[in-house]
Image (tube, rainbow, N blue to C red; front, side, top):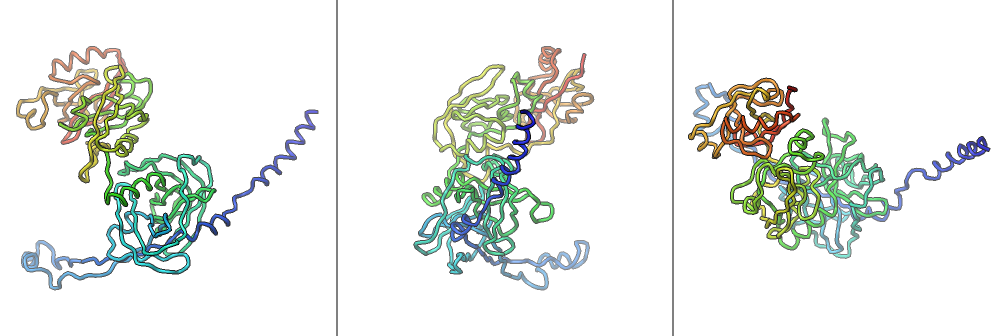
Length: 459
């Protein structure tokens, strides 16, 4: 009987695999391809000639003062991208980097018609732009739900890589919610769909023929496709597009904190059961967080009821919150959770106060032999220059502190949740952690501050 069952399984297995087969994209392309457009741009660039002699040449100062032999030259720069129509009256979504600097934009439809386009608005933070052509009864895409995407699901891109119009490529969703360096407001969809220069701004479709993303970036060491492509989720893009169409700009919330990732060692130091949340290492004086009572060393676990799993989640969650909203922030402070009401501010310039800021290299200061540090009190002049009321300066570092990356001249501002006021107080604080396996020091270097976890040597 067992042999019979095994034979039936082996017999049916190939049949099941072949029944699944590979997806057929032909109907999807036929229905949706007409809504995908080619976007070509041109701009006039001024090229100033360099001084034709080295700095140590006797004529260098002459050319610097009176200019090189020939004046600046202008030339026309052209580029190609993709886009897709989102409404029958000619509104089109594409990438900001495709059109932001353009003097002239031409949109070519699938039926070979060409239109001049104007920019309705663009948002460099998310790389989303809305452009408009004067036409009616245009084919337009259906909008899908990127949250419903599953890793491993088939997706398809249509665009103009290297100027080859209406090129179709397919692949699978490789990951969701991917964060990229310097891109803190977009939870990217990662795929292995072949994306190349010219695909930027084109749509990413699911198997139902709905747009779930805008193809935006690739990871490449050669300039071409290497198997890692990133798309902006369409719900993020449509929210940006609606704000651009309604207000001409995008409003984003801010709370005025500098944050860092909570590592396993930091979680242990602060008494968290697992690495989670965003660790606040400094608070902007007079900002929304400061007014609400959020402190350096707080770990933000929730914002307006949304879990903050990682530090990269917080800028996106805060940024999507309407300025002026009153929300509750759940923080972890000195071994306990605490709910803090806060009124969200607005980002008014090109500085994102909620995102992790470039901090000095991961090096902090410690004290006591257990940390391998020799420290000294800050002078009143040093405190005034740094704008701090306490802290100690590292004079010598070795052992655990050196391994953690601390260096001479670093200033220790806090030990775990406790401010460091002086050498004596720092030593007293360390005495309370004789049995601890690790501690976290808030270290100031230059204009930045960062918590540095330090694994302690065994007694």
